[in-house]
Amino acid sequence: MEDKKVEEVLKRIISKAWEDINFRKELITDPINTIQNYTGAKVILPEGKELIVLDQTDKNKVFVNIPSEPDFEDVELSEDQLETIAGGGQILWKNLLDNLFPTLKTYMKF
Image 1 (cartoon, rainbow, N blue to C red):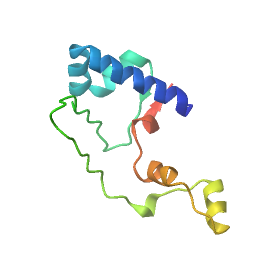
Image 2 (tube, helix red, strand yellow):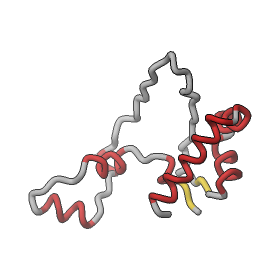
Image 3 (cartoon, one colour):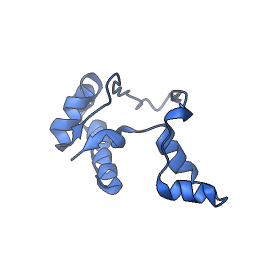
Image 4 (cartoon, rainbow, N blue to C red):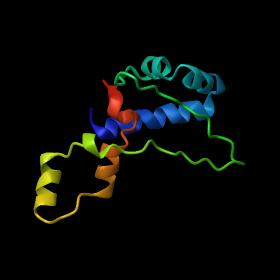
């Protein structure tokens, strides 16, 4: 799925959660079914993975997400990234982060 489409869908989900407290509660208690029912996207997580949605709307709190420690053994670089590195260049930090810390959009399929 195109990144732009996924990002647009994720924006819709967040906006709906801001506006509709019942939707927000459903998103927290049953994120996969709520996302699939609202968007039509299929959320397919790898075996052993769980999708957690946290309510961070309290403006009096600052939230910090501690990601899982990256497993460099499983990092797969694209052909372009490998060519860039082989040529002495650097891959973009965002691309590396996307590979190390996949986000929900990685698992959404339309």
